[in-house]
Length: 203
Ligand code: AR6
Image 1 (cartoon, rainbow, N blue to C red):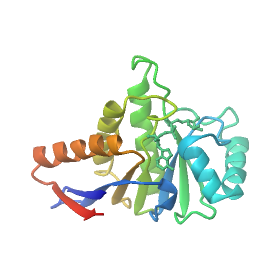
Image 2 (image 1 turned 180 degrees about the vertical axis):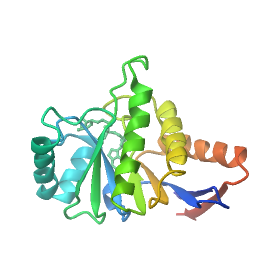
Image 3 (image 1 turned 90 degrees about the horizontal axis):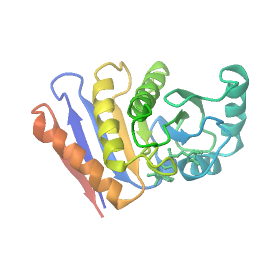
């Protein structure tokens, strides 16, 4: 398995995108993103894995967030940070992606907003690095190719504005998603002379 590292804006801000395959709960980035649902009370997929690995502190903080900030639930496209409990990351940034209904019900805008808001919250916390799962592409059924283009393009755009966030890791679970993200990385590196693409490790 390989890890790809794409350096963008080499001569300016010098941000890095990383693509890796595996379990996001093992990431040692400053924050990991949870693909949650509006209730913030846990679920399956990434959400279930994060609550299981991080322990009860995460759910306790989610309950506080519901009480104080979002009594109706966290809307799709928004993001909020909690502690990370036993996870190696220091923070969990919970976001809610859109449920796919064919693409004409604001799904792309909500997915763009989810990535932007996570990066904004991380930057507000002064974090350097963050890891994203492929938001909405599991239970919420967003087509992987379309979601990946949004994930990568939105991140590259947002990294031009962040003061602290400099490294974004995309953690995919399956090899098909890896190939789709890898194609996006290759597309960026071949269309932008300021980008550099490296293959880091092969196991
Ligand atoms: N690490 C990295 N990626 C993972 C992991 C993991 N441990 N587990 C699954 N994936 P999903 P969604 C991949 O369903 O589509 C939950 O029940 C998975 O293969 O976790 O945004 C919430 O509570 C897929 O590619 O999130 C919500 O109700 C991607 O992560 C709902 O699911 C996202 O899959 C949110 O659905």
